[in-house]
Image (cartoon, rainbow, N blue to C red; front, side, top):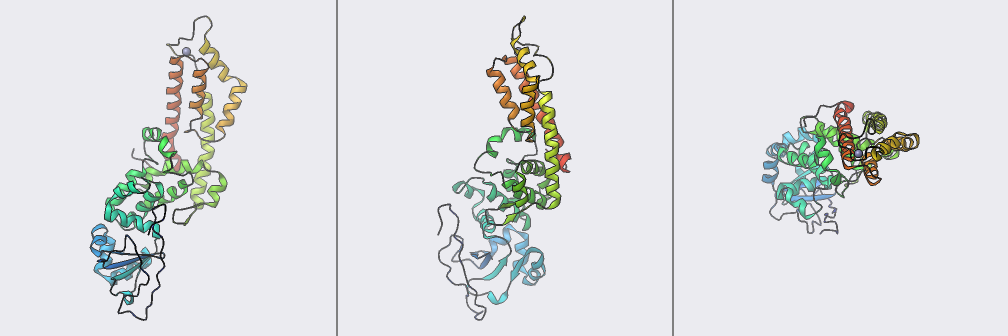
Length: 349
Ligand SMILES: [Zn+2]
């Protein structure tokens, strides 16, 4: 019972608590995560999963404790949003109700049963799926899943400049939508320092700061429909970072063309084409255009690299072009290294 996106259709089940001694779950239909020999029914939103207690307990100490001791589960229920009503225990097994979304819990279950390989058959390493896995793995203390999910998420929000630089294409791919940065910031905060959230936080806040203000204020709908919004503190962080980014970009716009031609310049001795191009880039009209781009506040973006490409096409020699490319990369790297301090975390790259 899958739709074209390979997602499970949410199914509605009604619970009749008046006949507690038998299974009260209606209309279970076909469901890949409804195992005939399952002995626990987990309900998330209006989707029921009939799975195995041993698999839940093996993967999560939280579920292990809950399943071993129902009284304990009732104590923990408020904190974790878990409800177990023994009246609902019947032929289908104990019924556990979760406050999680069906989307998130389905991803966690699929990883429990199939490992991360299952993602290859759906939409490989999509942000929404990895975020769901990380969110619930953190909540249910499933370190194996959490480590793997954060390792994969770090391709999008890396702690190191080299990986950030190398993965621009991944960030521009279908795996990630710009608005996902809002969910990423909230996820990083939830994970915290211990579970790798701080390492991804600078890149996530930076990507958030690139969103239009309206998007930032209105928030973003997660794959499961939950509205993700930044709280006031994170919003302020994004706006302050944006302001710093504009200043840094303007600074880079000036510094890129400062200085002389390369020591190995082949632009000619008497009339040096490279000197003319660099001098032109420092003059009013060119500088004004560059400042307009700097106002977008994207010092880690490609705008200066595009300019260097244009200068090379206009006749800048290969040595001077290489000099500018190194300088541009150094300027970006210097900004990147300031980023954790700007957003108030320490990163272990
Ligand atoms: Zn040159």
